[in-house]
Amino acid sequence: MSTKQKRKPIVVLAAGVFDILHLGHIHYLTHAKSLGDELVVVVATDEIAKKSGKLPVHKEKDRFEMIKSLRMVDRAILGDKRDMLKTLKKVHPDIVFLGYDQELAPPLLDYCVKHGIRIMKDACTLNPKRYKTTVVKERILKMHSSSGITEMTALAKKNVQHCPWCRTVSSEDYVRTLEEEVEELLGAFKNKDYENVREEIGDVIWDALVLAHICEREGKFKSDDVIDGIIKKIKRRKPFLEENREVTLEEAKRLWDEAKRAEKKTKNSL
Image 1: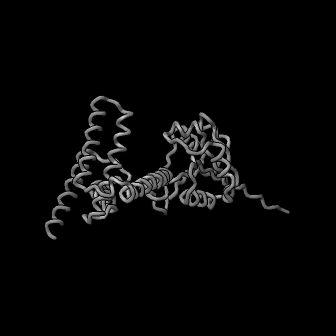
Image 2: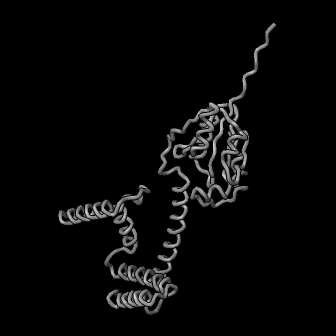
Image 3: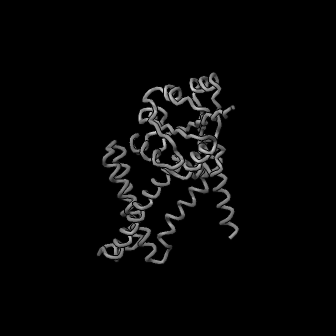
């Protein structure tokens, strides 16, 4: 009487820093789990992450605990502090599953080829411009920065409403205050007094916002249009910033000039 031999479970290995968990990570790990019976996730140590140019917000123990708590993860391990090949040898998976932007270093690739370990790559059905850790961090920083600008703009508006001098001063008079601050900024740069440069930049930004609100009070334009206008202008003239890509100086100049000409043509046609 013969007995059926039990099939050996297929082990899939996935690895990463997993600093700020987002939908891209969930899709990646879910896809990895679907390829086998056991999903082993290697969380990069702080030391390895820093060597690869990624400075984690969360410490390795915290990142490890987050990954371990995910239901599709059967086993989470912290990678070797110096040699990723040691971790690969320890797990010895049937499949190494890479993220769409991951590549195997030659020693790891050679080991997989030698031992018949399949290497598969995530197709990434999500938009990488949105679901990528570096982009998520940028959005967080942008939100933080935007909140600071919003608070300063609100203070500038209150200043125009309640400061006894700003309540009555005209935009033509206040622009001289801004001019004086710019001169002080230039002087600080000339003297290489960078602590003062930092303060003078803040003064210039503040006075520019106050001037915008005084102009709004006088019916010249809306103060919000100043910030909205510069954001739209930079996005038009430097589209590569939104695309998160490097460009040559020549390409940057070409894009700027083309956008500027298009803006001028639109204004002339009005």
